[in-house]
Image: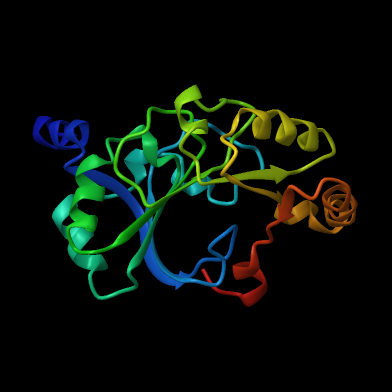
Length: 209
């Protein structure tokens, strides 16, 4: 990688983009909404059940200038979802400034393990055990979404909810390959703990990206 590209990455004026696509938001509070997704490359959180492990290596994805990323999004939905990988490994401020200047509502899905940059209309915090979120993001998260792989994750979810601001919407989401085992357990849990809601990966049931 040449020096100029490295400088653009450091400033957030270009980003490694794995893919960008127009689809329906499948998860959490905004499920069912037409959304344009921008998947940023690079992640060192390393969840063993991650379904986009190809996003982990930032070097495997093209470095794209912010103005092109923004221009490519203009014809699509007013809602832009920035996901990863872990997008907060990079400076998100230039990207969100560019998108918001084009009247886009910009959402992020993040583990919260890195400093929050950018200006967001919606912050979905999806914490991971291997790298806990930084304290600052709990106070600004609009949504807490905890992936449930086994029973112990329910305890982790409660620990995370206790740190999160009182206005955040709370979701438990079964890990896809464990859904048949975990959904009955989660149903009983939410009935007993109704502050939580269940999120499903409805885009996978719909067979869309």
